[in-house]
Image (cartoon, rainbow, N blue to C red; front, side, top):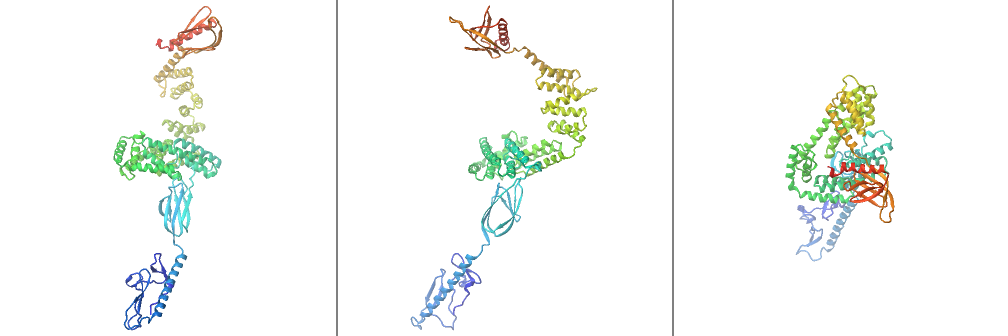
Length: 618
């Protein structure tokens, strides 16, 4: 008989061939598919007149074997019985395989897409790094995963992700609020964020560097007030401004900057098709400029050696290296020059911090962060310095220490930073003349004249006191800035008589006095404008007259009445008769009736203006 196999232990793959199933398989001899699966019985057993085979297409065949000893049709019944048995067996196998494939639960999902708003976040599953969002994972095993999402400026997300079916999952990132706003009421924080968003927008800090940008503060507003209209309005304004910025960069040939802006737009505005199209066109343009890289690198190196790190804008080492890297991101020389520029700028910020100029340090390092968006270290350093400054501000202040720090800031010319420390020192008893003067002069240098004047007056004279003489001269500066030139000269002459000071030498005071007195003399000699109500005599047979306004000033002479006459100073003239005054307007005389004293004033004023301003008199 044929060897029998259990049909429940088989499965069939998709292409119709027999495959290993539940417990076994149907295979042909010598590994040739299903052919010859059923062989002729061994010698000694009853032989059949035909051999049953299953070819590669699973088709049943009866191969006739000629036998002289067998009569035609002797085994017809057995043949059909065998055919029916084999057919039933194959049908069973196929049915079992089909049921298994239909009911078997999948072990993987076809596709899982992880999205974040904004995009560009680092994605990890069970500590395995998958790059920046959006991330597409295929054939991912079903199960539980620890998903970690991180992006600079946003709170990290650690989430237990259950993967059971294909599809996208989206996470909205929450910005890290500024440290200085901690503990404030929500409404106060919102007002601060709105103001800072506007300030950042005005400076062009749209969001290429997220922290401290207009979008950063707008997102913080949305966190506190999801229904606020401020955030979407800022987002739209930023989008339009960024498009304009990119177009401006393109027009001036700064393709590196345009690339940076378009990448920002694609990241934060995923539905902005205009940005995607523009970014694609720009990449095509950059790919055609590979031949320019060598020359750009040469110019970048030359500018760096000459000390032109960032200025002038279009001819600096930063500019040229950025263009080269926009075209060829892997160019090592351009990357090296760019890093050297960054290091020098960051070093300048640290030097400012070491000498105590905190504001200059923050400003310098913030510039580094804006120029190099990928540089996280500079942004971290800015946060550290700001946090340190905030901590210092809340400490119980030692008046003497504040006095020393304030005088240091004053000596370095950082007048704005000196004021809080010097104010604290003076209020808390550290009010030596030098401290009071430093505070008064800091106010003067920052334009706070009303605060400066009384402090200068507090400085009392002592023998050989340079500070007192400087205070007198400084009061002259205040008077001069207020337009009181006379008082300014008096104060400067007083300081000069005392011998001047280090800040105001005798020579410097003489120069100030001479310049102001010269202007005063010129002003005294300058005529004053004259306006009179006069009667214009028409003359002719009908006579008649009209009243109007006669004006004389540096531009000329003009009469406005029923008639209008005007003349520049060159074409004007005045003559007096017994009863009338004749004024000539560009060669045309007109008679006016006015009092004799007024007529004399008119003639004198015109003559003085002509003497002062007329080209003929020069």
